[in-house]
Image (tube, rainbow, N blue to C red):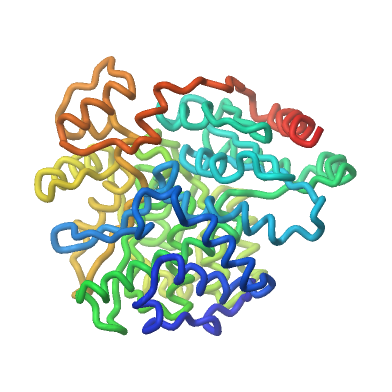
Length: 462
Ligand SMILES: *Cc1c(COP(=O)(O)O)cnc(C)c1O
């Protein structure tokens, strides 16, 4: 991918008359120069079609005086589908030789896992192996993963946190012995986490498309700036927004919304990143992250590409668990990023308030963003809140937030009750999960992850 994104400007006037698919094609073509136009066209049309339950793919709707960008209309009901529906096709086009085999490894805090499984299941010459933290994802999220069919699929719960699982995956990538043994069989490892640039680039598209939708609504005049509020964990989604800004989208502020694991809030406010704190399990589990992998990339860009400086910060993070950026870098960060966080109680309150005031049911991740956005005065620009998951992925927490007793309820009982109480409908892909068969039951310790990877490689590429 090209390093200097400002040379890759997307024509704003042009995209205002375009579909999401056309805009995605323009963004991908600008950044992936090694692909043929017809290859990218094929990738886009495979990815963004009937798997989505809304023809606009990422519809924008009004939310009192702001806007909501709904990113959960894909097959697994979370925004990660936008990237993971297209990533397998991009990887297939970019394989050096047609018989090269790829094993994709992913750590998930809940949503990436299923989105990656849905994208990669039964893709030829690619295997997919997903690790999630044992008992730290929702019932529905777990079922979505363990019911995934496909002969090239591995799903394993890891005893530990998401950060442990992510560190375990990184360690496997660095295990020269294992990587060598796989390479001898023509298998290379790849990642489907948001550290993979093929995940980030497709996400840039919806920032542009949301802007185009607001121009068509008459809310924006071409060239007006807009703010985005982004519920965040690994910082991938925010980074995609920053890339959109570099590519010419008039972005005012990107508001970084965290839950109780508010490392990023403190970092943006003070310049000190300190992961040495208690890990908190929240009702927005996909954001329960203390080491935001993609922040390093923002630091790289904002320090003017000073690799040595960024590497020294990352070394400090690894060695003592914290680092502090210099004052100049901090002011550049603060010029672009706003920040805030929401506790569980505040997120629940945001769900209740939003439903009462607008009749719109939001999920606990989106609710974190809603609380944070409401706490920051609008600076005269329209604001778009990224809605990252369907509330029906977290039905019990949504129902409880609306004031209902969920004691002893299963995920599906909560789903049914949530439909009745709100008069909204659960996506079919979630409500029919109750009839599906649990296909997998693997659990391992951190140091058992490598063995699991080997077993999936053996099975997939037998
Ligand atoms: C992954 C996820 C997030 C966080 O996205 P990042 O790119 O990791 O910042 C927020 N909400 C939901 C529902 C998610 O699945």
